[in-house]
Image 1: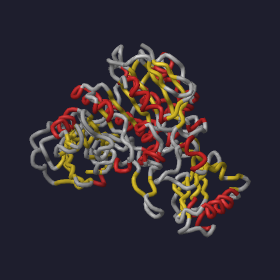
Image 2 (image 1 turned 90 degrees about the vertical axis):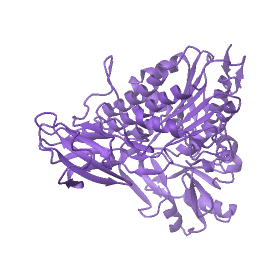
Image 3 (image 1 turned 180 degrees about the vertical axis):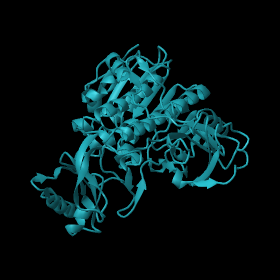
Image 4 (image 1 turned 90 degrees about the horizontal axis):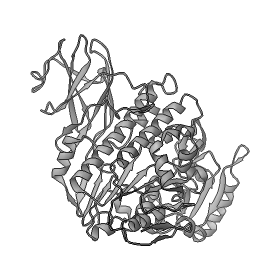
Amino acid sequence: MKLILILALCLVPLGAQDKGRVFLISLDGMGFKAFTEDPAAADMKTMRRLAAEGISAPMQAAFPSLTAPGHASIFTGVYGNVNGVTANDIPATFETRVNGFRAEQLKTEVFWLKPGRSGMKTIAHNPTQGFPCTNFNSGPNVVLMNGYQTPVVAPEKLVKAKDVTWLDKAPDGLATLLKSQLPIRYFRYDSGRIQFVGAVFAKGFHYDTIRMTAYSGKRYVDVERKESETEPVRTGNKTRPLARYFSEGLPIADITAVHFRLFDMNAEGTDFLLYQTQAKEISICEDGDTQATKFKQKLLTTTGAFIGNGAGGLYTKGELGVPYSDGLAERRFLETLELHARQTMRHTRALLAEYDPRLMVDYISTPDDMLHTWWGNNDKMIEPYRRWGYQIIDERVTQLSQLLKEEDHIVVVSDHGMTAMHTELRINKLLEELGYKDRVAAQDHFLIAKDKDPALLEEVKQKLDNFKDGETKVFAEWFWPKEAATKFGIGGPFGGDLYFDLAPGYKSTSGTSKPTIQKLERVKGEHGPLPTRPDLQALFIAHGPNLHSRAASMKTTNIAPLVLTLLGF
């Protein structure tokens, strides 16, 4: 039994796949160029082995090359002009936008419903368009878990001693729980809908640990002060545990959980730096829109919180330390990326143990978090930290691949690559300056005309085509949907009227509050431009007993048919 992957991107099964599981994992933002050409990615040993033993290729993403449309094309097998997800912020009308990450925007069902209807147990773990549960993403034999679009119970927070209210006496329930070498100091603080209570105590001869609870409840976790990690996940042949200095999860009211990391505390216990993760509700639907309440409670209690991202926002604001200085801020940021990888894998294991599926769809955001921050940055001090980040990604794939049996397949993909950006262009502000306000608007990499007037769009195109930043012609290429719909899947009822690509290094933004064109302080990674650019191409790797040929190239719309073929459809 063989599966031949034709270079024309047709999948031809020479026999039905009647056994074995299929694991599809999406590495958000992990481009083919980053994987194959970035020297810092050399330590991605498991992914390199899977690519060498299986098949791999660059993959054309959706256009614009953004997360919501990219994943929607992976999960539905069609582009945004058909599935309805044309951007991260989709134009519902000329004036309004709707969230492209939410399931209401899907106009085509996702591919995992088909095996579910045939009786195969299927799990989709944190996919985009995975909430709320609808007829387009959930159904019979499908378990759909998502925490990205669900309500926030408490925001991520970096807590300092000056931010808390110190208490004169022990809160109920905490007074008799602790043994301390020094007098215990109690505090509380509010975060979103939760009031957290802490007890600073000393296991040794100085204050070194904080016990955290919510609402002075019976559940608590201890978090001990530890210096930030100084070595990456892998050193030589040794691999250390991910996020080992983070606390275990603190379940709260059986709907959410948080983790803590005590980055610093002085010996007197009067000053500290405590990181609290965001608390999100999680949705786990079984067989449609029925919430798996008992399993959800079990998951939060035994494995901990949903962690959607690392603390990239705190890092760029300088709250984890001074970026690009002594490396402390970078190491702390990487520890939060490790926590995301650790928690998503813990949840994956729990889902597999509970439901025993034939198909597992998995997702991690680590590459996108890391490469947005450091892609294109040639600062020599950053390369070791980028290497560390790639190791985290590979370790996550390693742990998943260790669950594979001989008859199983694993497909590793991404939704887009990453390109280096040095300048932001606020196109809506430029359109205002040119006199087109309230007639033409820009969203991501396309224009929308209020009256759908082709002559007006052609006029705007000519003016924008002449726009320069110094000597640089900023607008590089133009695409009319009627001419490029087949190649890029652009246009459609919820797409643009005219698409464009900018010169390399320029980022398209929709805001109007800042200068029309603005040089960034530092080069950073971005995506959205033309997906056929080498650095924007997505990653495709597949490994298993029925994959033998080499693919020259792929499209994200090929993934759903491939996975279904591997399952015997």
